[in-house]
Image 1 (cartoon, rainbow, N blue to C red):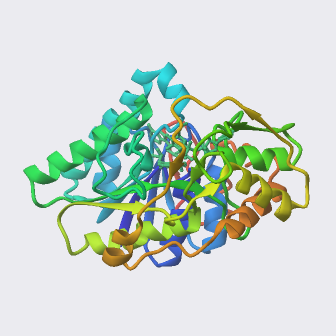
Image 2: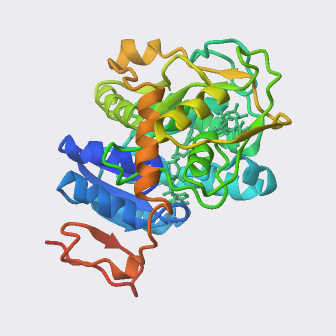
Length: 365
Ligand code: NAD
Ligand code: UD1
């Protein structure tokens, strides 16, 4: 199948593009590299042994979006591109609404023009807001506690209205729990810019010695050890969920919603322990105040995805931490900077950087 992947150079996107290529799909990536490096895709191509088309396009560039969709004529789109930092969304809400909501509108218009109406959207467990009904079901009422979460909620609602207005649309809203881990090769993984906001990358940087200590945001929650509990899911399991959703959408219409989680949670202290064990390094931590907006516990009811998609998460916390540590050790500073102008066309067979006119464009084979 011809699959267009927005945000395909990013953390979850790159792992999914690799699985798509390995399953024989033809893939075109749209990314503006605002939070990623083309190096991730260079490595994906190396791991897959096959090429991927890359278009350096911003979702907000309506004309180039339409041009790329009309050129590639995808049969389905997986839409990862978006900004995801909660704190930044509070400081710069308009940036988030513009990039995430307006960017998605442009994508939907371009899909309509190219007569592609099959879409897998990266939603998030953040749409459950501060719900304390556990486990979280797809039917649990939605709410948002910050602009980032509200962009996901607005997009979910927009997609529901779109599918209700035109039955040719077939859409999956995938609500990810907490994606962690990396490809077992250690060649691709999460490469946070600056100080990581999320627990796992932070712990990993403490274990490698880049940061002094983990701040544990509260140990007075009503959980077994008092620290926050989350449903961490291996990024490879998550990627597999997208392929399963694509298969399902081929024979359905309307909007389908699936939680992608493991169904069980781990506490902050359990994560720290697992990292110290796997890395053989000390992981110092100190208890601080709760982080505003955090819930005590969040974990999925993952049965709907198992029943509808035949998908379930296979990897446990130990595996997630091992793979994350392997990536961290091999790439202590993340991806090296790769100037998209200097991609070597010989090395990157089939790896086409569709770029603005003045940039060098490697030849198609
Ligand atoms: P990421 O930042 O690694 O990847 C997102 C990609 O989108 C990046 O490569 C970035 O350059 C690109 N992008 C952003 N804005 C763009 C634009 N206007 N035009 C073109 N490209 C653009 O993030 P990720 O962790 O891979 O997350 C992927 C998606 O999943 C996001 O939509 C995110 O909100 C959602 N999600 C992530 C998590 C998580 O914890 N990682 C959890 C739930 C949901
Ligand atoms: C956070 C976002 C959520 C987003 C998700 C993406 C907030 C309030 N929520 O979720 O909207 O969808 O990331 O993956 O930012 N913790 C520490 N010390 C740290 C970092 C985290 O103790 O340095 C704790 C948190 O309190 C929480 C757990 O670790 O209990 C996991 O935190 P994190 O990785 O940030 O994920 P979420 O809070 O679930």
